Image (tube, rainbow, N blue to C red; front, side, top):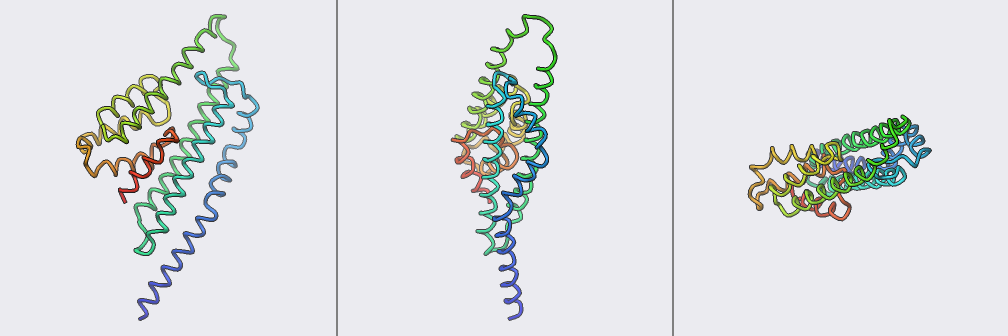
Length: 235
């Protein structure tokens, strides 16, 4: 009888902890991001005409914000899944993925801020000659080509086509090696290639979980839900 009471108490405590996270995690994430990056963001917003591979800084800030919110939504979905599983005991895999997702969110924000700062510094340096501005269209093309190849890679992942996915992410990496997570995804695909050679393999669910947890920065908004649903099958 005591054992049953203790289990019930543990369950109630677990529910309270998860409810606490549901209520306070998202504002906390936003607050931490603001505290860490407030000076960087203030400087970025004061120089809105900086061009990053053809993308004006105002657009770049909006993209960073959009991606961060999408990542936070993924974390929210993981916490909801963890709460749904508390009746059978908390799922340690989901807990680990929440922690990993938070770490990758911070890493990706740091990288994006560093990239903006690097371009800002380059913009402050006088161009070596009057012919330098001619390179701007090429930079714009570079961004468009990398984004198109990245999208093709994610679409191939949804279709369970590992060969096409590798080719697409490799193409994105060749165009722009530091674009989002294209290089990391390409390396991961090669490690998983044998297990993913069968489109019906259950390893696909695990790989989608890996993508959503570690490499989803840059995932197009209209494809994210498909990746999220596929990843949920891994738990």
